[in-house]
Amino acid sequence: MTTITPAAFSPRINLNAFFAALFSGAVAGVFIGGVTSRLSMRAVALLIGGSGSFSAEGTFGVLVIGSVFGVIFGALYAFLRRAIPLPRLWQGAAYGALWSVLVAFFFFANREGELGLISPWVGAALFVPIPILQGVGLAWLYAVVERRMAGAPERSLSLGWFAGLLVMLFLAAVGMGSLAGEGVRLPAALFEWTN
Image (tube, rainbow, N blue to C red; front, side, top):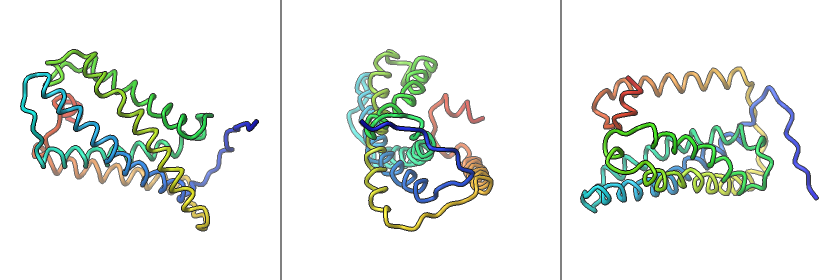
């Protein structure tokens, strides 16, 4: 029987593992999170009597958002995966389930826009499984990328420099978002939250 013990805290970040998680998160975000979210959005539109068609720009936007959230999803997975003492795919499902709680809360707390036209239970049933599926996909992709990088020399960065880098990336993202202004279509609740 194998016992899983938490890794000791290190003041350095393993960049190989971190970038494997970012890449895996982006791919899972597009192909699992983005695609399933788009299908769920179409189901919501059909449930409220809307058209059953997809627009290229709407689909592209959802895939880009899926990629961005996938990168965030993967980055946090890189730090939290060792704290979930389960086999790899179950670890991904448990990690996704944590995010599913946030998604479910969003459906019960937000009753504006198209989501206000359907039951919160229906919205949650359509969208809550997505982070779980994305977590499983992320864990699987991370294992594949990690195996491919097994022979690469380890690269690491001090935790202080890494934290500074994350702050700069966050400020760059906020700056880009503020430059976009109202030209970017956001759900009403998210737009109110950002302003």
